[in-house]
Image 1 (cartoon, rainbow, N blue to C red):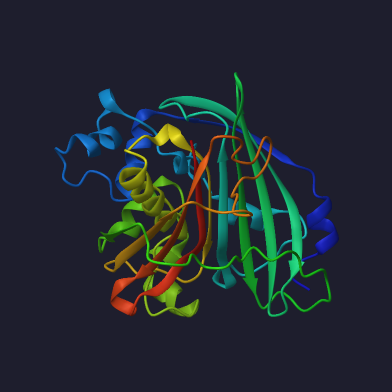
Image 2: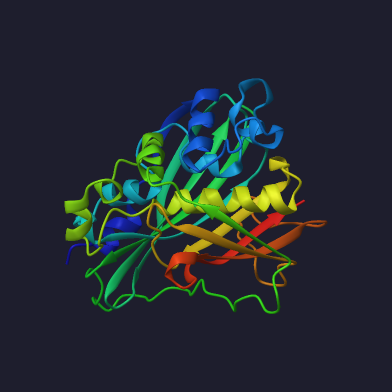
Length: 303
């Protein structure tokens, strides 16, 4: 069995120090398509150091290095082929607005190892603290194809009923042909996103966009469209990666105001939207593939 459930579940938490600069923030924002039009004041909030604000999803790449989906694979008891790995979903709770320059202590631990039949599911929880206390909490869900079937616990379902009725807003966001090549400079150098031979070995026609790039593009669309560009209003954000996105495609982002009960995306310490918060439900699809869903179960909790 490629995954030793007991060893992975009981592995000690791993802690590391990270830091970031305004340049790291700007690179991330460019990697998710910010800066178009380049002179638009609304875009300069993401690209110009004198006006810089940090989109909360920057937390997924802060400090550079391997993303959570890869860090989960270095857990004791996990020995799998990278070509069989898929990022299944991501949740994020921000406890305070992220600074444009910072240093934090980050702790990872595997909180779940589940048997999904044809695949195994690893859940990696991450907590980040700086000198002022908790900064963010996140959770990465990692599927390993062909690693299930050992008779273990199946785990909870994270799927919810899709939003009903017409969306309140719909926007389209083009994905550049070189988007994955730019985004991978934030730290995720998985060859699936750049090497055609590796992509074909993994079962795809060509390199695919990072799921966390689609994740960032989507959050930016919600913030810019429904939250007046105020990044500090975001409290939590969760999404399930329903399918891949190919560079060069167009994303259609549908948004519904009001999340309803049971839609909190919060994880970790102090999770949950709390009193006075609102929610946006979102569905994201690839226009050129007949509106094929690419992000599902998306909820943005906000002030």
